[in-house]
Image (tube, rainbow, N blue to C red; front, side, top):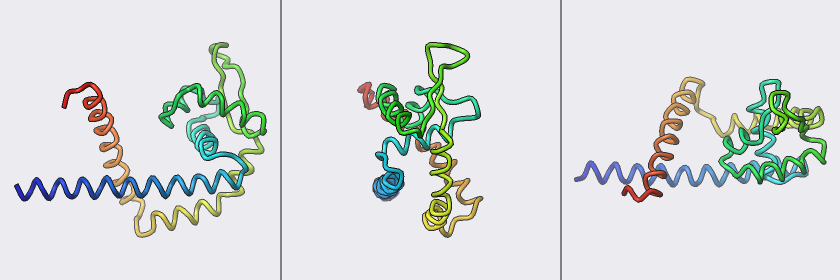
Length: 160
């Protein structure tokens, strides 16, 4: 029984650490967004487009899936980002029903202008972790994220 209690305590500690990290990352994203004169969700959309775009643009659905938000919200916000000249939206050459989004030159320049600050921030956040340790941690977190989705599905289906 003591082993189970220890595991439960470790799981609770992990969850509270994740809550704390999430809260701090939200504050950081809000700060980056304010530097560009946009909202935190808009900042995350730009970051997702930057991450997912491999040169042909990225769909709103891909962005919504990456951020785990509703596609209609992505559409609404990307229209605003387009009006601010931070995002380009063009009809997909493969299917005219869909738009492909990419960062504009202005957005790339703004993000590049923040790169030194972002590197310093990452050094602070991940201080004490080398590349191998961070890779190991990311693999474990990916596994936990996958298991969390499964647990959430089971809970919502009333399996537990």
